[in-house]
Image 1 (spheres, one colour):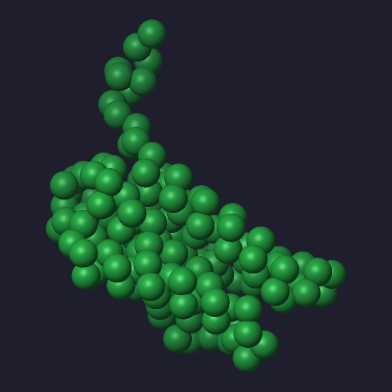
Image 2: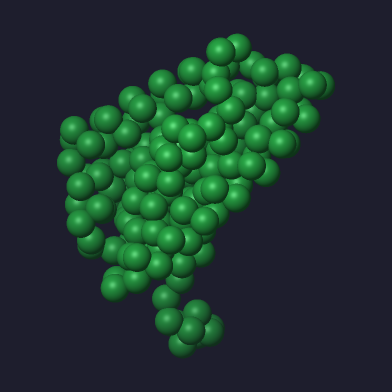
Amino acid sequence: MLRSILMGLVAGQRAMTPLSALAGAARLGNLPHDNAPARLMARALPATGGVVMAAAEMAGDKMKSAPDRTVFLGLLARTITSGFAGATLAPPRRQWAGAALGVAAAVASSYGGLALRKRAMRRWGQTATGFAEDALVFAAATVIANAKPATAKADIDRP
C-alpha cells in the first residue's frame, strides 16, 4: 500500500502525472497487479490521454494565471487521479483501501506542496521552481509506477 500513498503524494503536486506514469508502466508491463485500471492504462487511447494531460498541466503551471492547486477543481482532479492511481497500485482485493490512501495523501500534500512552492517562488520565481517541481514529480511518479511491489515477508527475509 506504500506505493498508493506515494503516488498520492505525487498527485498532490501534479494531478495528471500519476496517469502518465501509470500509462508508461502499463505499456511496459510493469504494473504490479492485473486489475481493471492497469488494463485500462495499457490501452493506447487512455495512455496517450494521460501523457497529454500531464504535459498540458506542466505547461500550464508556469503561467502567471495558473490557479493554486488547492482550488476546488484542482483538489477534485487530484482526488480522482490519486484514487485511480492508488487503486491501480494496490494489492488484489485492496483497491478501495489503496484509493482512499492515495486520496488522503494527495489532499494533504496539495497543501504542503503549495506552501513549499510559494516559499521557493519568492526566491527563485515561478518558472524555475515549476520546472524543478516537474522534474522531481515526474521522476518520483515514474519510479513509483515501475517499482516492483514488496512480496510476502518470507520472500523479503530470504538471503
